[in-house]
Image 1 (cartoon, rainbow, N blue to C red):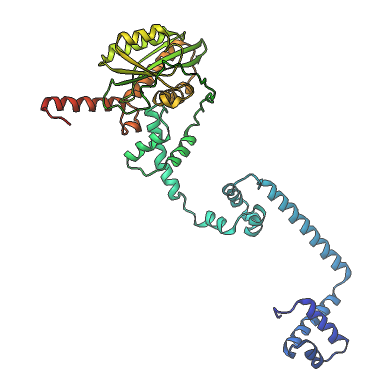
Image 2: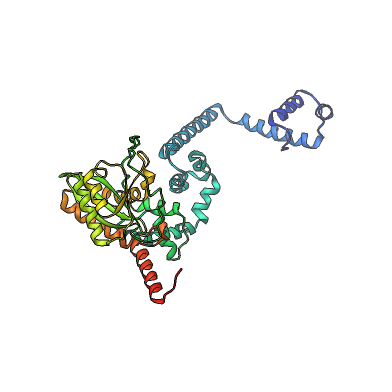
Length: 389
């Protein structure tokens, strides 16, 4: 039959032919030659003769069968659509469901019902390799990331994990590392930081450091601050002194009270362990303990100049704030502490890790211990050879 004329139009010409029109008249009316007209009319003659031989009972029976078949197909289609909730299930999951339904329903019904492109279905069922290039890369990265996290007790973040992977010869982005880290173990998010700060600034609190966070040698500038840690036994306060040159923790003390004696003892521990030269700068925020006469007299007696951050500007003490952020994310928020004994052990372990194993981008990807050792080795070599920079 011709593809350019509808069945309705052909049937209308056939009715005219049956009512008495000749082929010549139909050719003039329709503009169609006699050959296709004869084919159409013979086709309709066969249908007409076949329909006249079928009884009415057979027609009703066939119609009932078709209706039942249609109802069954509609039920199957609804069941098929309910098997995968299309609004929430991603396409890879729908494709995995479709693979089990192909033998029963066929690819056309499955793809139409589950809203899957047939090319995607054929790719996953016939052409897709068992392990893709990306999956193979992930399988190679996962053991290396687990080893790095295990060596650091899951303390380091995605960027430092990425740097160690690059040093091992892998090519990987920070986003990929973060994605795999979340698959390995979801980390606890730190609590929200406070956003309101006082704005008063006493006239004797001067910012001598002025955000010069890269001194040329150790024991030129120390940073200090106090943070609060919650345990089952109550609150504890940690005071830390940080040498700004290599970001090394030189002293730390834990106490149940947040007073001047805590920072005074911490400063004495740092001073006795480092024996710094004169003109040392001791920088902190404007906490009440750091502004007490007792502590300021202690610094004055050791000929140490005291520097203060502006109120409400934590960026003036950014390296110290960064250390506490790393401490809480990488250690404190990952464990539950019953009291002072397990908290002290945890802090001692983390500070040792921070000084000796944790690399810092601000000092060229080295650890604080490596940065200081390189400096002292370099200066001792210069003194022995009599050279100067």
